Length: 86
Length: 402
Image (tube, rainbow over all chains, first blue to last red; front, side, top):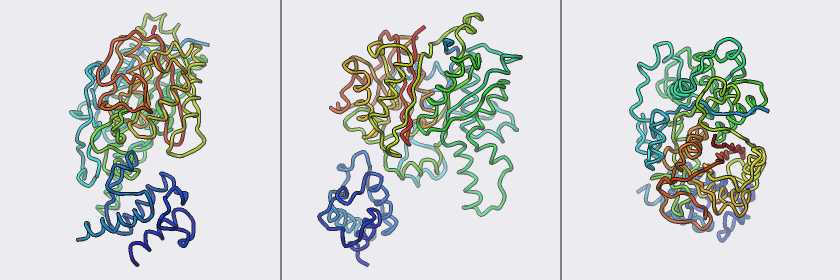
């Protein structure tokens, strides 16, 4: 399974919606995921890919990890997987 | 209704092993936060905390006590010894029968849990020490205080996360105020600074890796602390009759529940508790000179708390001094309100306001007088101590100079 499919699966499960309803342009807010849901999603992503995601809930925009849309999250994880698995 | 006064105070925390040492650190704006030291700390992403250093339990407790006292109980007893010695009370006869101990605590014996899980899960042992349960139960500290000082009245432990101590002290206050008990030993303690304790907090991603900077624009989270704060709450007439030194008077409290979110604070819930404490104390908002803030240094708490203070105090919010001493001793979770009450006593009795250290940049959403970086001399008649817990449980105490 590719990274994008797996991330969509995780986000859909967190938002309790169908995977087909997770569009790449959507923000987590659009999908109904709040701050607690975000922290839980990041945990699920770390577990799924065995990576460390740099994220502090107090300064979500400060970290290199861009959470502004599903697309940016997928891109960020692809980068982290490449860095941390090489 | 009885008047309730504080006739004894004790503490141990990252700033000092006694009240005088802690107040000196408050006056100097000293930071007690530093590198954590315990097993497996290198496996944590968060490596700082307000850890008590230079503390040796050997010699303070005998062998049997050591086998029964988790760190949070040890801290509690050290603080209780200081508080009760200052009050100069001996609990015998009817005084002993009626006086009790109500303490706040959230995690119980986390170090004991951590060590024993290691034995059975990591080391594969099939046997644990027989006292694991009485050591880790979170009423252990209150029970040992009652045993050491012969307190035979109402005694129990209150758990409401970060508001535990304030809820406990509010309960003790109410017991003395209504005449149910002439004296109550109260306050709280916490010791979560072990691998499992910090690892659990790390998961929420609200911890700072470098410092606790409440109200500062560049704040990036909370820092955990540990320790205890213990007080003797006494019926004013009882204290007066025996000529006890009075540190401050407790004049009111209020509790509220946000009933909204398990971790995100609510302005309305906090404001209701602040306004409620002022009303219960029978004073006006304009009488409040100092507020010891909950001030955790997280993005969410600090702006919500400032909005709640502005809401509850109205225009007077622009004049009140509000500081967070968590910047110095860290967040003691269930024990935090107790250690922070010392800053209220210092303001009322000594006329010195403890600062919010680590303050670097103003935040328009926290535009109050947060007493940045340096202690200040000021005459204060009424002080409030805020505590707003995870779970949306709030408790605010009101104190007056005597």
